[in-house]
Structures are given as C-alpha cells and as structure tokens.
Length: 366
Image 1 (tube, one colour):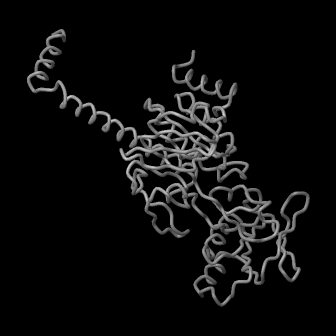
Image 2 (cartoon, rainbow, N blue to C red; image 1 turned 120 degrees about the vertical axis):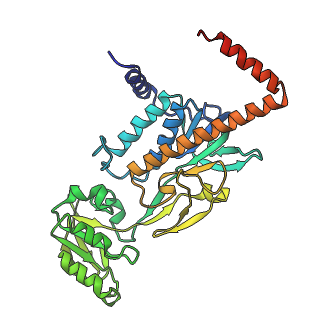
C-alpha cells in the first residue's frame, strides 16, 4: 500500500502522462492572467526546485518556461545523486509533474516585461499576451553558451564537443582528447582532462606560443599534454562521429573528443531591466545575489546559471530550493504584519487580547 507521499507523487506523474505539465497556450488559459504569490521565470532545475518547495508550502506559483534549457544538447547529466546519467529532458519532465502535483501552474511562454507596481509587488507581461501579478519573483533564466567559430563545431556540441570534465569527462575517459585553447580558459581544461586520458592534445588555434608563460609549459609537460600550433580550420566527422581536428594547413590530428571553452552569457535581460546589480566573475558580469539568492531589487530572487557560470544542475536545484524557503518566510511575515496592522487599526486592545487569551485557556481541559 502506498503512503500518502507516494500516492501524491504517482498522481502527479499520472497527470503529467495524461495531459502534460503545461497549461493551454492561448492568452485566456490558466497561468496567463490572475495573481500569484510567486512567478518563477525559467523552468530548469533552479526554477522548478523553487516552485516545488513553494508549492509544498501551499503558495500559488506560476512557472513561465521558454523551453530553452542550457543542457538540452546533452544526452545525459552527471553528478546528481540518484539521477546520475539521467537524460536532462526526462529529469525536467519528472520535476514538472511534481510541481503540478502540488498545484503549481506551468506555461510555455516567455516573460517580456516585469515592473514594480508601487507596493513592493510586480506586474508581469508574457510574450503570448498574458498579464499576471506576482508578489515575488524568481528569475532562473540561465545562460547561453556562445561557441568558438570553428566550422562544424556547433553541430557536435553536447555530443563529442564538450567543455566540462565533471559533466562529461568520465564518459570520454581514455579516448584521444583535443582541447581548443582560449585565452580565457588558458590551459585549465587540458590539465583537467589529462587526469581522464593519457592522450590529450592542446590546439593553440593561432595563439602565440610565446604568450604562454613558462609555468604553463612546465605544467603541460608534467601532465603529458601535447601542444599543436596553428589555426584550427574545422572538424573531421565520419559516420556521425568526430574523428579528427583539421588545421588550416590541411593536417589532421585524430581525435574522438574536442573540449572547448564557450563564452558564457547570462540571460539577464529581465534582471537588468529591473535594475539588479551585477558583479564580476571569471566569465564576466553576472547578477549579484546574497546567500539566499536575493538580488539588489527587493522582492526579486535569482538562482542557477543566471547568477554565475559554474552552477551545475545539482547546485541550481539547491539554490532554487533555498530561495523558495526564504521567499515563503518573507511572504509569511508580510501576511502576518498586515494582519497585525489590521488588528491594531480595528478591534485590537490589550484588554481584549487578554480576554481572548483567558477564554482560550479556560477552554483547554486541565
């Protein structure tokens, strides 16, 4: 016999299987009008995690998801306890069903504008024509990976063109690995992947050998990393598999994996328009948040890759969870303060409150 929690989860999955997690797409459908305690912008791990814990706190939640997860090209995600190797799309589908099971509303749309309404809350406009009200906002819009301009590279992204040793490194262990040098990443990736394969080649891609400091050359030699000079002109693909890296001069180096360092650009248009402060990171400016995810804009939280380039799925989920718990407490205090203010302005008096307390005490059996 299932527990109530197991039954609740099964009901959520049944609802997802029967109808899908998203409400209708027309402007009059649920989720495209009305007022919510929290509007979550972005339906990845961070946004859904925030929505899940808020739903469990019996908050009304709307998740607006454009359907553009950063890890969509990847066949699997790694390092998430109990979900190691799970396809990202499957993971998101499961969590959407869980959010819906707690009363969360999910729509496939994009937030084009969010503006303070003068009372500390927000009016939110959707691209599909809807307009909703939010007491609080969570922005979990992630980032975009801008890839190096090498012919054929983008088509292999997330397959045999990768960037993270912790996301994909174990799966390519012991294979011939190429690393495309970039000034931003330096030799960092080549050193990390040398832990996973004895056959690692760093392609300088036109960078000046003399620009590398002596300390870098010493580390590369100690790690057993080969170094190839000259611009990279393209990739060699055979039977839908990467088989080599071709230099501008025509020479081909056999490689089955290529590691690159994309430029990581936050999707922060909404946060910028709201006036959120940014801070510098090794990948450039990202929205600044405190330990709970609160931005410099009162009532606006951010989580996941919208706040930094290093957030993996498990980090993003934790950040969303943390933001959700703090938002719930923030709303609770706001509700209680309003209730207390109404009592002070109306029937409240010290004598009356003491009388109510005495009556309650007398009603409790001794």
